[in-house]
Length: 118
Image (cartoon, rainbow, N blue to C red; front, side):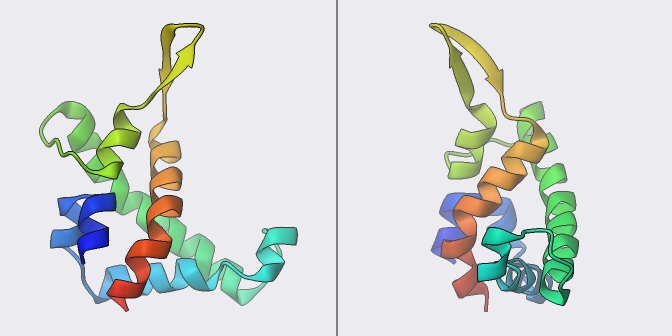
């Protein structure tokens, strides 16, 4: 539970449920050796992974919108990704899009958060 709070924020931690555990399980199950060589292979595990990713993006979209609006702020990893800006020759560059935030956050936190949800 600590990993989900530190990495993905209190919004995820407070709403851990069988549904979130199922999504994590599908995401994790879709990371097979074949995924490295052929991530779009037409397998059942990849189909489940892709559907779970869409569900996770829907969950995170609301959280990211609240964070970007300033309604919610936290010192967790997700907030750091949201606030990140590329360095453009000493100038502040663009930040991550919502899709990139979700993708980066899920990839970084999944190995640490998923086992505790199971």
